[in-house]
Length: 180
Image 1 (cartoon, rainbow, N blue to C red):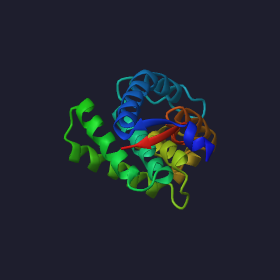
Image 2: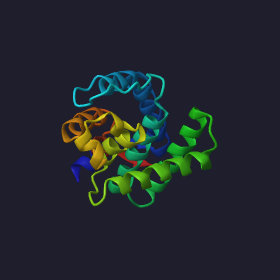
Image 3: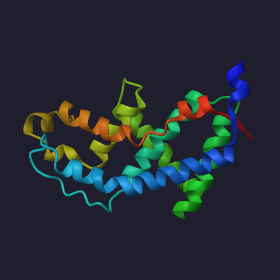
C-alpha cells in the first residue's frame, strides 16, 4: 500500500512518447553495432553483409516484441490505450499510416509466435525473428542450415544482443503509477 503512495504519476501519453522516442533512438544508434556483431559472428561459416542502414526489420521486431509485454503488465484497459498511443506516436515519427503500421506489427507478432512455438518467451521469439527475417540460415554450417534452425551458440548471442532492446516495462510499473 505504501508503494502505491510513493509512486510517481506518469500519463499514458507521456509513457508512449518516452517509449517511442527511446526505442527509435536505441535502434538508430544500436543497429549498426548489431549488424557488425552478426556479420562477424564466429558461428556463421560465411559473413552476412547486413548493412548498418538496414534496420527496418529489426525495428519492427523490437517494436512488436516490446508491445507484446504491455498486456502482461498493464490491465483495466490501460494496455489497450497505451499501445494505441504508441501506434499514434510511431506512425507520426515514422511517417507511416497508423493502420498500416498496426498491420505490420501484428503480422510480425504473429510471425514471432509461429517461429517460437511452443515457447511463449517473447525475448527468444525476438531473437529467432532476427535470425529468420535477415535470412541468416544460409550463412550457417550445413548441419544447422539443413535443419533450418539457428545454431544454439549463435542464437544465445542474438538473445544477449536483443536483451538490450527490450524496454523494462516492469521497472516502469514499479516506479510509476500510470494515469490516463
